[in-house]
Length: 283
Image (cartoon, rainbow, N blue to C red; front, side):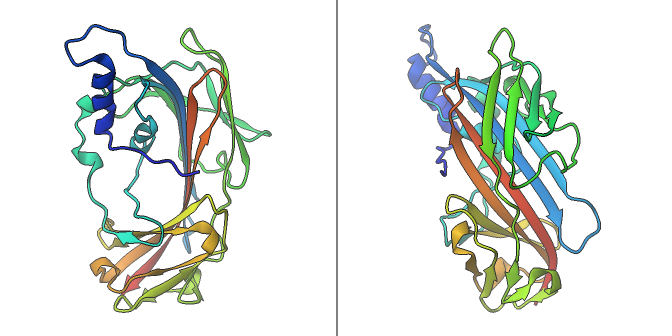
């Protein structure tokens, strides 16, 4: 199930609406949500190991506000186009003032562990990277082994004076397989004709997931991004590749976004993003 999120500015506007404006002293109705983000990233044709990152938190926001933008802000994220479309990413996130998050609060969840039914990893408590009060929980390092693909995940907390113990169970997608450009395996593709459309393909996955492709230039910045329905197993990068020329890279992401139920909470938003990146040249 894909989530839709209003601009992050809505967090503050909705909070003001609930509170009757800045001058009102009436209490604000709130909702509490668990947020979980899991990322894995590997480079094709490179000996360096894959990296991983997990982020978890329980956030209290005004009742009508959407907590999902906070999940996007917890790590690297870009605006995705509609399925079957491409765009040049903007900088909407950078333009949002920190004051828009003032009404959100991350609650103390006690000890927080994440993993599969066979092995759990204790996450480290940290401050949220933006001006939001409370504590969030992240991986202690960038190791990918505790964050496998294609496995059922279990998030557990011991609870605190703010929250009871919680459990969240969710299934992670598989990593992408059989990636190809113009019919040739991505592992053996060294260059791309940027003047012509480029067919891309992968082993088709779940219809609820999205495959998006980031095109980056030699400086590492994202030149463009295209999104496709995972179950279709194919798509086309348009000619020109957003002006790319010379050395660059293609990053294939499998994205799963889920809304889950957690007893004692108003809901949970989960995001898995598993990426494979290959160095290529554009000519």
